Length: 459
Image (spheres, rainbow, N blue to C red):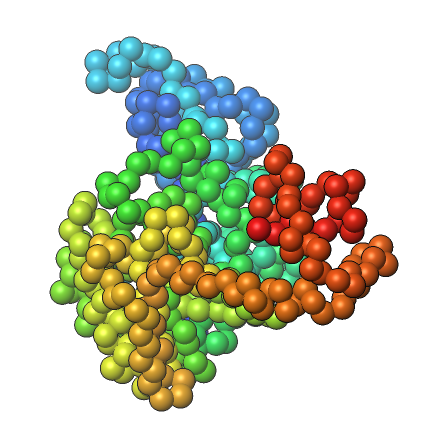
């Protein structure tokens, strides 16, 4: 069995154990066109230059004829069977351009925190992950291809990047001692660099409802690596009411449904149900389902533990189709009907410019319906225990409270102590004492104008 077959067998075993894994994509292979300045493999008789001050391991699969080669100060060539280099005069092939040397791009440009450089093991059509979860989470198994050369930058982040296991060069590391010895070796230093640290040993996610990724603290670095080609700025969206889910770096068009889950909720089965029963009916919509921490409510007691919820992100791939909102309403109706069998409840949050409900992780609301179509009153329907809880919220103005001046006068007649051991024995002079012209309603009148100091003027 070849190296590729062993890697595929390892991935199949991970799938059987319900373990999530992330696969590293880029390589430093000699035949990879993306590694060269001309975006192609050097022509026969071309001059080849490697960065002089970089460490790199390069896998060579074929034979190449070159006229000149500038090697780095430290590195290695891994030659496959039948691969090698031979000398040849400078190329005169017109298809090779002007004859400029082919330069190997900086091998340190690949970062661990770049979401574009990872592929999830459960990737499927119409499924995606928010940006923070595209990078290996703390319960993931990380796999580096054994049939390709690679180099990974760990970055300068305080605290190690923690995962369940790391598989590289045919070895699986599940203990920090073994991984540390590999990173300190020459083979490890050629493939991992940077002041950052890498740690293994986390337990696999044993909850049927899934586990929180744990990359919230690293999201600023994840977003910086993702947006670096765009100058650090998010691209404009094609909709007016864009939203930003938890773990996402930039706004997107669509909707969000938050699910409250019970002990019987199965995340994988719910994701499969979305793929089979709902998404085929809504073209141009992609879905991301994951467990995220739910922000604490304003009425929660101090020190209360943070709860979790299931975040369902419905992203539209086509501008202004409205499919995500229609799918969100279909999911709410499905949960209201079958939630008691799946241990799940759903919450829909209506829009409001500048309004941020306590349970919403987005900058705006999940569903942007016109305000005139929203109900003028709150309504709730609750299913049996641990089943469905569907709640709609609508903004309404607080009624004006009537002021009862007789109640105020009776309160003033009561004997009470004020700061400074000042006792108001008779409130009648205060009720009929005029305020000075420069004073306003609710201001403190000057002490020199009244027999009782620090008395508040009333009209």
